[in-house]
Amino acid sequence: MKGPPDLSYPCGAAHHEALGFWLLALLWASGLTVWALTTQTSDLPGAWWFSAVAGVACMGWGLWRVPHRCPGTLIWANDARGRGRWVLSRQDGAARPQHLERLQVVLDMQSSLLLRATAPDGTPHWIWLHRRDAPPHWHALRRTVFSQATP
Image 1 (cartoon, rainbow, N blue to C red):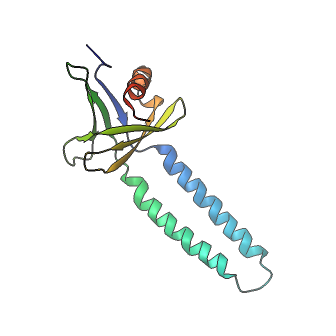
Image 2 (image 1 turned 60 degrees about the vertical axis):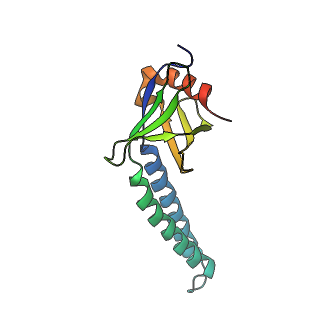
């Protein structure tokens, strides 16, 4: 056999994304509150109102987007010639598995990987992989990702 062996690894919605989102929202709201309380006049400046509207819009987008990170499985399927392919299989009951043409490591934090995968139609998929999701397979996953990823 040439190339890395077949591999599947769970991926999907990361709990730290939601936690980070709510932490940023809390910090933003606290900053606006302090700004409003320290303003000497009764009228708040336009920048405060702009920040409030922009922050609410960003929170709305985040509330809409974070729950839509459906879990799935990233699969490396090797063929007899050693040329395999990456496949992203979602667990949302949607379409069949998505074949990926390109996989790029964007961020490597040793216990987590952020990957940017490109579908044949050019659609990007951002995939977080965490060691805690399947510890026995983490090193095999990293070897496969780094042997097949494009810079």
